[in-house]
Image (cartoon, rainbow, N blue to C red; front, top):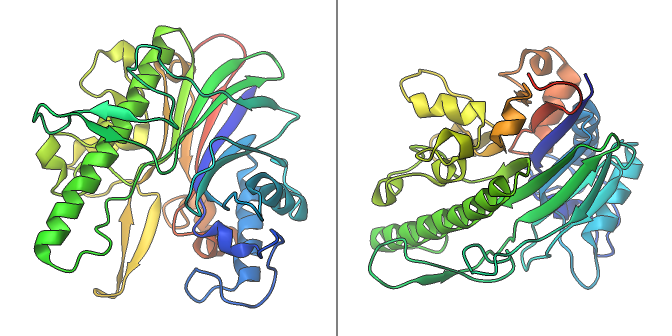
Length: 346
């Protein structure tokens, strides 16, 4: 059966691997990865993207788009340098950060276009607008806006299979700039509230697509997960649960098997997609932050998920070049979905 491979990959500080004119920095200068040079990180990324062999990769933290440099040109320059099948790039709404959401894809397999939607009734405005929501139930709606608007894509395979993709990078909850415990708590709560509101917004867009009969994939870095911090308890659920529609009818729930495992919480081991070094504890911390969620009709096709973790995935671990490349390339690891797009539904 014909399959397409869709992946999401958060590339840590991809932007710093290009100079001010958008050219690749293939030199021995230090990258923003600890003890990794520009050339080493670029080479590692080339190995990882080649091994992924995906038909489309949602690149989280793609290089910035501004007056001097252009995300699409930089990603396509990177793809050409390393001979990738995913050689064309697509950008949606550019943002004011140095971290864009962009798609690298194989034009021989997929036709894609940026196709933003927005409800006329205001239930789910376009992602470059504002979204009114009262999360703390005080009778006052907060106006929320994305600093990284999700990338909405209409995709179609060469065989005519159509589906939607929504690339997401939800706001981090880190209380940056806080200097006292009180400030940490206040900022953490505000960041948690904003992150949850963003997920509610995307969830409403998903429901609109499901109502219209669309096949939907939501993928990216949510900086969130069930039980990730104590502030989740203030709102009763995590952003991941919101996006999955965990407390809604089964016919409108999204599905990601790794999130489902984490919901068990009694397991000694849980899947992870990111690995960070904690200087204060002299150890690494692992977390499940990256997801590929599918609509019920796509789940029925029997897709297969894979986290390209250098220690947890046997094939990655037993391939030394790929294992080391995954560790050098980013603090996140790719998540891929092999989706059957032809023949009968499983």
